Image (spheres, rainbow over the protein chains, first blue to last red):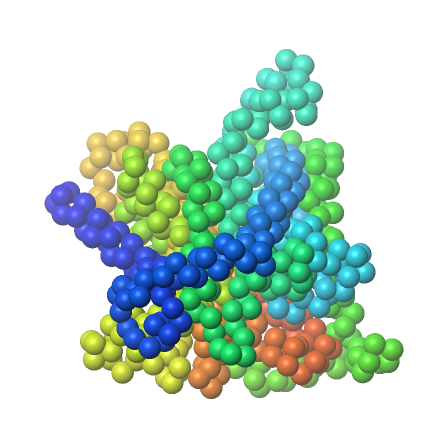
Length: 270
Length: 297
């Protein structure tokens, strides 16, 4: 019976993986075709295999700078999100203070602002500040959804660390910053890794804010891609190639944090 | 959890940076929207204060009601499919070794594709003449067309969302499962606990925290879904896949009605807020109740 259950699970897993990979395979397939071939015939493999789409992206500065801009934006966003979220998550996991529960829920509510109509205020705010078309503008705008999530995840990891560790450190004469950086941070490094992954993921794929706040110099790849839609029709092939290339950096990030995810976290609070 | 946390008002200083960041990037724009919602902006120089007029108009808007119901149905369908599927997936993912790493990476891939690309890929993927999904369904004898048939369009958007976001649920649940010490399972097998009992009394309680994140995130994000259906179906055919965001954007961008659009988006925001508040408190209550139940045993 055990054997059977094992087989059922493997079958289910394989079925899901096929379901998950087919659209991605189709994108990869498209990225090696020409537009004419994509639109004219159905085929499992490119009939006229071409690197042309990838070559376009790697040789055209307006394409590849999109990737660089995206990486800069995401890096700034991740750094700010985690830096401000760490002390806050510590406060939530260790102390109770006036309004802590309300504040925690209020933070979450900021993820619920529908971006579509908040675009105009964002645009006005950043124009007033003279931050339009800068990396920092998009990184700051993305804090809206990443900071609450970072606090939430980190708080879960921190609650899993017994409070005796803090107390012992203070008795031993550690100051708070020194304790936090040399003892506490290494203990929750898995949490930081997982948080970084989630921040990366949400910031990397966000389109509306990124497109509104940039025009040329800081344009991230997701916004660059929208120009494949033009009056002369869709440039499906280049879009597919660009799509394939957007998956790669994220796949590298997952590869680095996979052990942290596999080690597990249960989230103490909630 | 055993001892209560010490009261320390100085902890506010640690939270302050987060509050400032979020206030800057969320409260300021929100205030601007509130400001718009109360005015009729005829031109940048000419604004008239109209009070709650836009709100009243929005509440009476039949199309908005339609979009709201479609949205609720869609979000509930998303939760009903993705949460169980994500849990099942997490349970069947290997725990260790290179297989675990490989499966983790493969499962997460769909999360990393920009949302507009997700829509575009599915647009081709679902076409009966040149797309794999469309062609397969056609071969099996379904007269499938996501552009012509409202039901097909709706199901395609749902399938796309399931494909896109189930990995998030699965990753979180997987992490929750991995935090259970082996000793728990050994104890359960000594007691002769059934597979279901292990799930119900060991795995599910341990996943409670991560499941709460998963449910809330999926609920909020699916309630605000915009890019993918916009690219895939453009809200059609008819208005079958015109969800709230889509409808709002049509209002705000298409007709340049900043005032009514702002009022709409505030109502929208309040609806999400209310639903999440109910969900959050309900899940917390369910969790504490089962914890107390376990304590009495």
